[in-house]
Picture 1 (cartoon, rainbow, N blue to C red):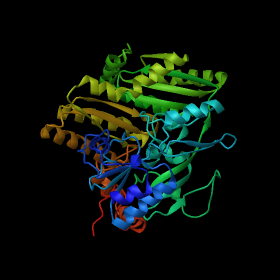
Picture 2 (picture 1 turned 90 degrees about the horizontal axis):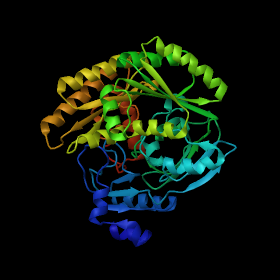
Picture 3 (picture 1 turned 30 degrees about the vertical axis):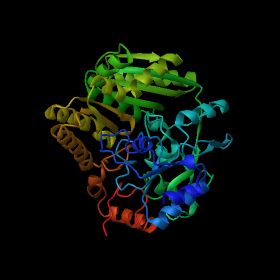
Picture 4 (picture 1 turned 135 degrees about the vertical axis):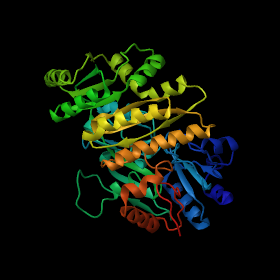
Length: 454
């Protein structure tokens, strides 16, 4: 297989170097690493197709790899084989500014894309925090802080170029804003975590940079008050672009790491996009609403440096916890519920953290019902890992029993695999049949999302 790969790629595009293998043996999760046999670095769709044809011929597993920033073990090659690293396929191919579309290769990062789009007065909306690749973001159906206004990754994808298990190249959509033709393949492949094909091009929806941006930081006595205030804001139809909850413990970590002096109580970070006059009216209405939910104080920012400081504090929370607990590993949970159930779910999660005696905090994209618990665990301690797993199971089951999902944006990988049958029931068999039809030898990222049995 190694010899065959070197016949279709240049020598520097094929590696069995131990350091390179180790870099591709893990993601940012706490899951156990596993080395691939070979790492390849294609530059074109044609090369990816040739790699897949060889893998299909030799029956060798293949795992697509973006930046390794995933959180549920998606890119860990537990069946060994080939890891396809898409870092060399990192070109912005076309910006169609009049159509508000952009065509990119999968290795382009969101920061890289937004730098290019800014020249045209445009931006790409999905903001998961990490500077992930767009291919990886599509693979996990990523979302983030702006999804309450602009939607998740699946909402932005117009077309994907996909290389299937046997090397066949297909397109899943077109450039039109809507279509009633055929099955919705975009929706099928986005979120498939590399189990159905390798993305080699993405056509994505982009947006005009808003005329005016205002951020606010609102403090509350309890998490319940903060979440209830969000429901009030959304019910009033105020066009909020971001609304993030940070609990008391997480505010403490943010202040330590980011050298801020924010009040250490449950807090909402909010952002509003629009024109200046319209936003001023919306914000006045918002102030009246949050006052009804015992808001203790609200600070506004329009200066770009202060806006950046606010959102950097939010995005850097994971690193704040890592630096605050040296020697421990971060475990991030990820459940999503109907908004009406969110306050109860967060209160339940805090009670469970205290019951298990685990250090951590709770943050969330509360505008769409998604929240995360950030846990710091000693991965060398089986007792701590067991406690963390039990905690995770407790909040997942709470969400599923109330019509929620085990993962709002991080994906299934291996970490959430055990909840698939409970969440999907008989529909999981449909997913398995689709996987078998497209990948009969189970070569593409095998045993992620679901485990196929003969």
